[in-house]
Image 1 (tube, rainbow, N blue to C red):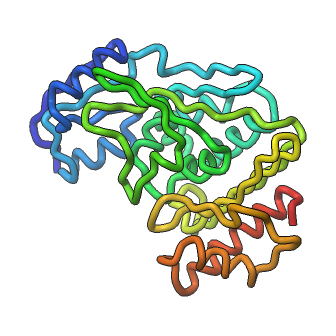
Image 2: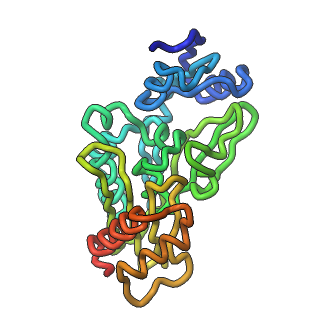
Length: 270
């Protein structure tokens, strides 16, 4: 199949992109890397009146680092993050996650902003950024706002983006150099969508500690949001998964608990 007819708009600035979205009253789609949108267009799963290409907006293609924040433009590709020479424990986690996404061709074209805005529960970035406590910059024709990623991810393929808004940048807090982390995903073969993801971050310097389960039928959830237990067991993690994500049932409870336990062991936290 092929897409229905639509207007193609190539924006050169954020203002142009936001205005184009506003002009089509919520019936336009943003084209970043196209790894999800193009197949959906071809299968007519989406039928927008316009597609707004943001690939030429220079400010969306940069990674800016300060002592406290890693600011990543929405058009930065997975491969850019994977190959980046930036150092530090926080970026090491980002680099590891980027390098495990799908296949080389997808990483070369796919973008971090497109992945987050698409909000596929099986996407790697959702779990990783939830564990790191990322904050998102959203831009509209009349206003801009910032939103924690936990408030942005509302449901499966559902976000807090309002009609006429687009995701511009992702801010990741820089954690301490002694930060420990572990990331593990269960999939049937390399490159396929994950069936379970576990991401663990622990930074003694800032007190930032999170255990996040991803690849659910909903956005990622945090386990033990208060105090962590003194020790971890597969039985305890199974119960924590049931408590945090009641929709997970049967053998999938074990898949998620096992992914989290492996992430804990990778980070030397269990």
